[in-house]
Image (tube, rainbow, N blue to C red):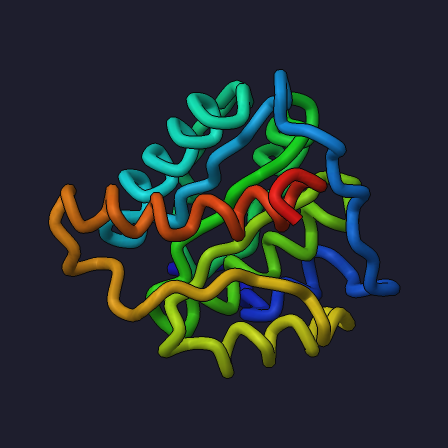
Length: 179
């Protein structure tokens, strides 16, 4: 049935290497923003709301919205290449369970190593899992963003409020604005 074994750390796909942060943008005005939805409930809505806020308040342009095939798998090379070509910054989310939090952090580290500043959003219930994945990838200090758990059960109005609460930390994570 399955013809391969997946390493949940993603290391068989992308070797860890030295930790590094991509250079933060001085401003988001005109910056190309990519949104990477991991298929978790409310992830697409939360990312869309954050993208709209980045556009209206900071002049960013959401250029690409993509959804991973499965929340627990690392971002694949074709998607990574597509987003790298179309984005100046990427917002990844939502880590709202153990495996998706770990995968989101791994994806954020991958984008950072490719030179793309990444804001990774995880719910606070899975901080330990997210931190463990950062350590496995050789970047124990990777700065992922926390939001109260759960995200999946929020209604659209609550998602909009949550996006507003996250906006400043997302912006500060990928740019010099708001620091």
